[in-house]
Image 1 (cartoon, each protein chain N blue to C red):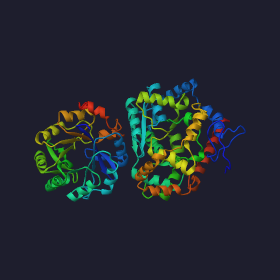
Image 2 (cartoon, each protein chain N blue to C red):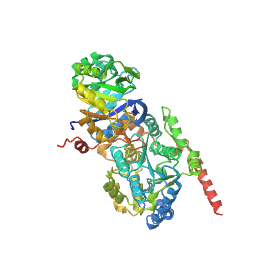
Image 3 (tube, one colour):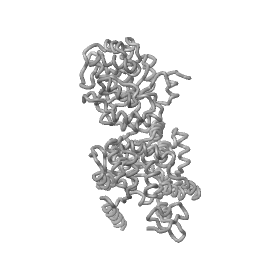
Length: 256
Length: 377
């Protein structure tokens, strides 16, 4: 396996997969089961599934849906969406999921991070944060569930979640989401400077060189993307793709 | 009903086609039809190239005002992949839009092939993803209908999308199809009813479906037979019928030039089509589509009869894999394998058991014949 993981992020919406642009206009990209089957054969390192409706609708994870796709995945899977307590995490893990991402609930309930990390181990608890620039270019924490902005400083929040035991931070840029123009490198570098847990960067990847830049210039330990793995060409034609292993080895200079 | 078994002395079609007839030399009606009718519009020779040059010149002329001259379909299979390659290399000035339908059953091979084709040949791609919850409901309805042709939901969606995207959205006048006589000149009508019949599709969904088809596109008789061909002047052309198309040679070329990967039998780029052609049809109906395909290759001179018979010695599906394939099909359709097996055991039906536009279609084609005769006078 590569040291720098390259992770497709799949968004669940109405039982299907979608891809958004700046968190809006979800475009239907297909059925999770078939997408997984293709990603399996393409030997993908890891997958992240985010249910983008659960927190918005104040409901629990859809366990039946999770079970149906978790059993198909050959690779480690992270699930996020609607988790509010450790019992739910336990249930999600029992379905064959390796990691969970806490986003809305992490903002509300700091104890959940600590408790989950102690119970299940830090390596299985990811704190996901969606970041949006305000009119003055200042980074703010965005709450996708109610489209609000969280009061408080992003960097202070990230230091706090690190101290509480988050094993990884999933850093997602709302402004770059779906744009395929490259990651927000300033954001990544700023965050990288203040925390030491691994950062998975997401939002904006459009070409392979974006992954390389995120690793080498941004210090990301893993790179994630949505559009990059599901769209092709100027008409944004839906077509699942994943770089060949050798291509990634070469890209990251990880020759064996 | 045929009471005895008979196989054509020239190709490998046999009495599994209920409508087959043989002449005194034991040659079947399909072979005769190819010789007497199809040969007149099949030019696998320099004459074909000359005609195709003219056709393409016309397409380019007619396409001047739009963004694209023509549309092609891409499934990842040999025919459409080779067509894309041939058009790109022979007619680089042709502006091509490729359309792909994702019915939820794409194999990794299919998406790999399509990606390599569009990237290496610089062809713009449009994909239409059919909503899976609707597709699943429609496919289950078709399975429950006990009809032979289970590819209707996929095929109908392809054409409905082709019209919507190519004609309505891009104003394209020509569809260049990978369909060809070299590998498909023989296909018994009884083995599968017209996928374009929207009336039948909707009737079956109404009877066996459980959710509303909100986004699934259909194209009705009037639009398909009058609006698109006569008002929008949308035409289908099969360039491979003007070309010395040899399947094995075509495969060699696309493997070499496009990093194309082979997926085995014809049309197995879709996991469902594979199940339907290699298991549903032969097990339930006794129809082995390979027989029609191999017969087409024999009359095209791409295979000997003996080679075809050798292929048919092997069962149409891999007995070691079929159980896991059925498991996957059932899981995708949200039913149990037992339910799928139970559906398989129900009695077969034909398109005549459900409402259809068949009679209307027959009358329309007689009318067209009448008009063309009248015009010739």
